[in-house]
Image (cartoon, rainbow, N blue to C red; front, side, top):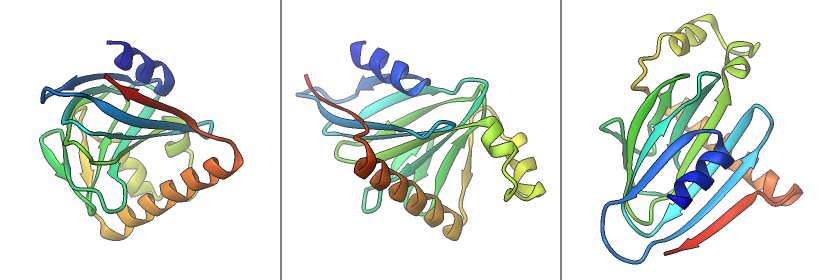
Length: 169
C-alpha cells in the first residue's frame, strides 16, 4: 500500500500495484516532470498488475522502453510497435512481467488539444477514445514517441536528477 500511495502522489495518477508472483520484490522507478507532461519509468523483478485510473484533466500513454519484452494493457499486448492510450477519466489493468521496463507518459488534456501541430483528425481521435483505452499502431508514430520520451528522460537526467525510488521488499 505504501508503494501505491507514493506512486499515486508522485504521478498524480491512481495506480494500485499488486505483485502476482510471490518472492522478494525489487523495483526501480523514476519520475520526470516537464510541467504539462510527466514521465514515469518503472522496472521491477516480479510480475505486477497495475490498476491505473487517469484524472479528468490528462491522457496517459503506456509504451515499452527500447529492447523490453511486451506487457499487457487493457488485455492487449503492448510491444515495440504499439502504444496504449487512456483518456481523461479512463482506467485499465496493466500487467507487467518482471524485468520489463515500462514508460507511462501523463499529458494534460490541454497540452494535446491545443497543440498547433496536432491535425484535426488526431484531435478528434483523442476526443473519441473509449474509457478503457485504445492502441496507436503506427510504426513511425510509436517510434517517434519512444525516441522523444527517451530523449526527454536523458535531458532531464543531465539537467536535474529525476525523482527516483529503489524499492526492496
